[in-house]
Every structure is written in structure tokens, then in C-alpha cells.
Image (tube, rainbow, N blue to C red):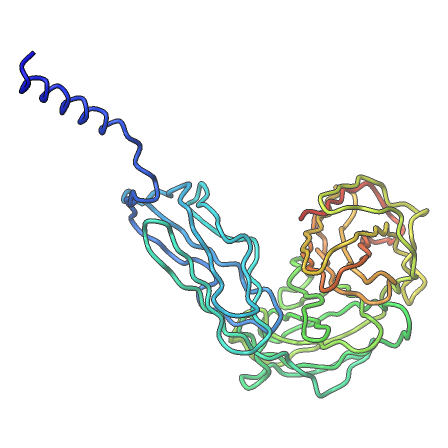
Length: 368
């Protein structure tokens, strides 16, 4: 074979081999039609709260969802965090992390989302100081008030009237049924303990009146802040607020130990831990003990076809209610909690079905 012909063969072979080389996906720019920030782009929340979870949607040139694109989220401000940091778009083209916790200093927090190979996008949240109530309210009060345009700025950009809500029970969590009726809007009540969210009527989606919101909440001994506001940001006007006696936690110890990632299937009946309300009626519950490290996060999920699910998370002594979630008349609920210190915590799973003595089977999981 002549030298020139041999060179032609070698060059052809090299070109053929090059055509078979895989090009790293990171350097291939996807053909994208649009990227839209559909949730969490511009929001208002309070110090120490979880912000509305950011959602970003990617559509292709044909306006159909693009699945599997990598999106990297980064919180730019000290004390702010996002979990997980890397997600991929789902079948609807949406990429969203599990949570976004804002910093402990009022101001503006920024979350950057990088759609790999496409572009960079920003989510902004304005962090406001906690609302502090100047008026004291106790269980049993009936209050007439006003949500005004100059009220305290609460999470979601809502204006609120704040009260210092005091429990009359000195050593055990005391329950209260809270109902708020707005004259021209759906009412909403948020409870806070030391500036951190404790409970909200937003979990209760079923009410007898379209302008009424209600919930059962357990109060730690001492004082919490009660925020009366309109569910829709920007709405203002008069409201009526009523607080009634509800169950008192009796200080039962745990029925069982449960680990992060663990599950339990059981039946609540009259042999369970009793919660006694002011009228003498009894709720029943199972109480679990879980050990968490400082900063460890769990999502507690409770499901049932027989009972209305209610979850409490308390300290190891069963005295301080750290967070709670009342799903109203819904048979499934979930509650997120992050431990501030290493140690044991109690999870109380109970039914709020009327009559309170009615129980039934349920499942409970503690997901990392």
C-alpha cells in the first residue's frame, strides 16, 4: 500500500472513532422553550419560618414539559438553607426542593436556581420580624377586632392583629378551639411560640361558613402569639374571634420508640393515652419517642380511613408543644419538624373525631 493511501486509511479511522465518542451531557445546551418561576419568586415570611417552596417549570420548544433537567438551588444568605440542593424536573417540567428555611435576621433572602445548560434564576423572600401582640387573650375569650392595612406584617404578606394568648394551665399543654369569622373575607389564625410557627387554621379546609376558619391547638404552658388575619393577602376588615376550652394533655409517656425512617401501624382505642377537654370529653392518642440530632429534620405522616388525624411534637417531658398539625376533617396529615438540639422528642398521634372516644386504625411514618 502506498504511503498516501495508508495515511487516508488512518485519517478515516480516526474520524470514525471520533464520531462514536460520547459528549458529556453537561456541555450540551438543551433546547428549551421557556423557564417560568411558578411559586415562591416574590414572597413575604417571618423570621425563622419556612418560606413557600420555590417551583420552577421548564417547557420545551413545543411547549411540552421537559423532564429530567438538573436544577441546582443555592441559598445566598447566612442562616438560610434549601433542601435538597440538586433536583430534576418531573413529568410536569417542575423542579422543586423539599424546603427553604429563611435566615433569622429580618431583611431580604435570595435563592439562586441554576438550570444546568440553560440559565440562572432568582427567588426573593422578604423576611419580617415576628409580630408581637400588645393585648392579652385567654382561653374562653370572645374578641371583636379589625385587620387593617397598617397591622403587623405576617407571613405571606398578610396584615394581622396580634394577641398574647395565655394558657391557664401551669404545667401541661392546654388545648383550645379557636374560631375566626371575617365579615367580608375568610379568616385565618396563626399561633407562634417565640416567633416560630406553632399552628395555623390554614390546615383546616372544611368549615360551616365560607368566611370562618377554625382549629384545635395545644398551647405550651405560658404565652404564645395569636395572629388574626385574612386568608387572602391584602384583605382587610372586621372579624370575630372566639376561643373555647379543648383537650388537656395528661402527660402520658410514650407507647413505643420509633426511629427516623421507621413506621408504625396501630389502632387507637380506649386503652390509649387520654386527652381530657374542659367538658370532660376524652380524646385518645398513641405517643412515640424519637431521638434526633441537632439540626436533624423529620416529616411525620399519619394516615387513616377511620379517624381524623392530628399530630403533636413535644419535648421529652411532654410539657412544651413544639409544633402541631391539625388536618381538620382530613384523614391524612403530615408535619415537618427540625430539632434545635440533640435529644429525645415525643410524637403524639391522635384523633379529633367526634365523639372523641371513637378511634380506629392508622399508620404513622417518620421520614428523614
